[in-house]
View 1 (tube, rainbow, N blue to C red):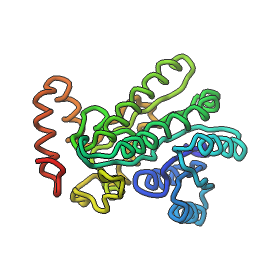
View 2 (cartoon, rainbow, N blue to C red; view 1 turned 180 degrees about the vertical axis):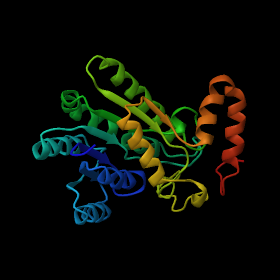
View 3 (spheres, helix red, strand yellow; view 1 turned 135 degrees about the vertical axis):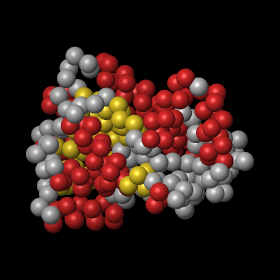
View 4 (cartoon, rainbow, N blue to C red; view 1 turned 135 degrees about the horizontal axis):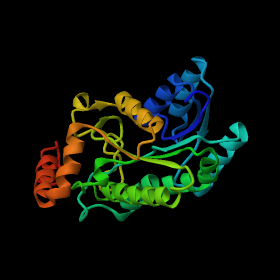
Length: 268
């Protein structure tokens, strides 16, 4: 990946931050995007001090014009795009019957439409470079998770979108990876939206027992270099996807029971 131009959205924290440092070690030139200005600049400055060619763009991916500006500024700086990683994401935790509809709309705007906008504007450059288009999805894009209606819906939509883009461009050399981490030690659950749209504030899971974001990033980067179509991480994630293919009713019960054991679960 030496000298390749890589765009990473949601680069200020979690998996996005880990991807930034992983690609830095592999010699890539980085364009980092996030709406959190302070954290993004901190990450970018750390990389620059290490001698990495990195630029940061304050970007709200729910805004089409911001996504267009991100892609255009990258092309103005580097004249090409080799990898676009649609990583930025947000979660939610509430029963559908209780959640305010704006919460679901916001989750869809970030997780789905943000990826659509960035991909649309970057696609011509990715086709020229025969590059890689990546979507950071989730096992929740294979199996609906109770209490996460908006999140699961956005990930199902993202995977369908990326599949179609892959098929439409299968003779043009475009590589499309759908990466599905399992439960990862990142901040996405801390910033998950409650039923009224406020931040959840703390994770319902023991983060120390989850796969580190750095390990997730390493495996995603390897999958991109090997031009894999799909990546499902963690044993639990792989078993969930496999069993759901053949025993969906059984997995409904298993998923319900598992999620009901979370601290302060919205259902029992």
